[in-house]
Image 1 (tube, protein in one colour):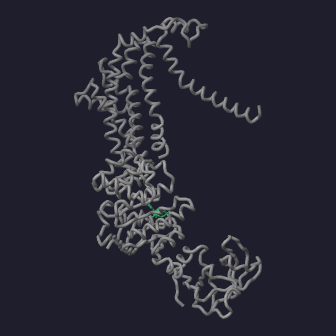
Image 2: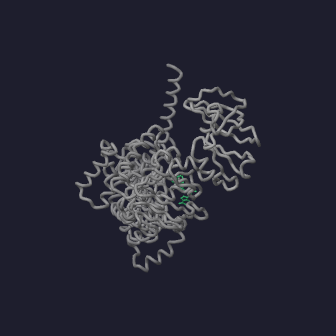
Image 3: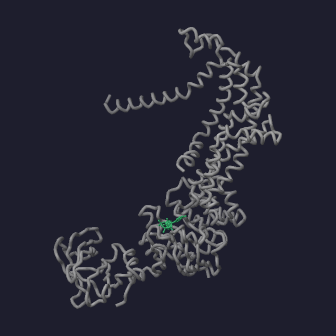
Length: 348
Length: 287
Ligand SMILES: Nc1ncnc2c1ncn2[C@@H]1O[C@H](COP(=O)(O)OP(=O)(O)OP(=O)(O)O)[C@@H](O)[C@H]1O
Ligand SMILES: [Mg+2]
């Protein structure tokens, strides 16, 4: 069982609680993504799993073995890729990949063979004689992944491995990473603050905010059923609309939430469909090719000034004149409710 | 010719003029040493009374008399050997102590490392004039008076604090992550220090060497305090002692000595200058 179990883990830097009581159970073979805004403690959590940072409190178990305390990084059976890739600048690509193998005192011929096989897998055999400074960002990233993999670790820890790549390369690299993880089935923890990356890669996503894990779930669960307003607005682009309409049918101080892509002109829905209709004052329309974003506010009931965004796919060709009121609607099954005071979700 | 081309040309010319100015500034002392070292005494001193005399050219044919004086009637070759010996010993001691100390303070001592490093640096600021009396007692207690060993003992008290601090500052600019990566890749901390860290701090070590070299080459006060016999002197002490007799300056021989010591130094510096500056700016200036 090569999972990772984290129990009530804490890390304090002075008065700052970078990781604040995290409980997380990562299953064997799983691809778990840690997602959260900058500075929420993702890297710190990862570094504690790796053994580079000593926890202030709590427990870490890797493959059933307790490792917080004095187990050094090299004895934890992990491999890590830093955001900077941390390639050894004075070693060639071959020597970089061979370095972890030299530590395990493998015979030379076996090392060469393993390096060659791993390099073939990542398509970097051509660069084996080059130095890291002679490689592009994408190539460096592959060398770093290759070096991490060559040791057959129990757990992969990846800290924003795609952040330094340009947008186009990032898409292919994401696809490669996912395919590669499916193939070798090693437990993987990846840190990112890019939600598209998280949704695309993770079997499950753990969403962190200010040192705490807010929600753990599959991409669908996290997107469809956010446990609180933080998750609701952090995941999804544009973010979920949240409104306090003072609706008498709802308990007091309840926020109504719905995704922009569910907020469409009434005429798009069947007349008998169970929808909730709104009067929507359109302020501005943004044309983005595949979508249109419509900005405005709700003007019925206890009208609010809160900006509401609708995301209309290009397949809806209706004209939306700016500055006019329109009948918009949200299917009832797409409505979510949150407690206005605590932010946590409410079932109604 | 177009205006743009003309402008480019003037800019070029200005650049070269500036560069020439700097070359003159840097090269003139060498030229002056060279001319003075090979001038006949009459040619050297007549300018004081005869204002029409041109001082920066050979008016009389060059002569080797000053060089002969330097090598024949003083212990100059001895002093060079002594200096080389002291420099080598002090460089080895300084590197052996300051590099591990700076590394440990920067990487292993946590928050206290920084403060301790500052404290160590401050000891460098205590002037030799305050220290040479207690040092003299120490040296005579150890029975090292009038020996090169006394200098080898005392000079590291100046070089080690500064170089420790230099290495710390340099390491702050070398990302920790490469060493952490090695720990994850299966190496113990000790193995990391032996196998990975040295390559990363080569520019820092070179800076330490150059700094130590410079300091030892020019040191005068301690050498004067501890060394009394002529054959045990270093260049920086022997040359002024032997060639300034009362108020008689043997300018030609003095300049010959300066020339013969500074030219090899200039060559060494030029070979290492890039790395030297890298070490300094990465560590001391930015840090
Ligand atoms: N060594 C340290 N000393 C003091 N504070 C630290 C240290 N390392 C991290 N922190 C603080 O802990 C908090 C969490 O940092 P961390 O690097 O884990 O964030 P992150 O989620 O990885 O952010 P990013 O997405 O920007 O990488 C930050 O506020 C950071 O300033
Ligand atoms: Mg981070």
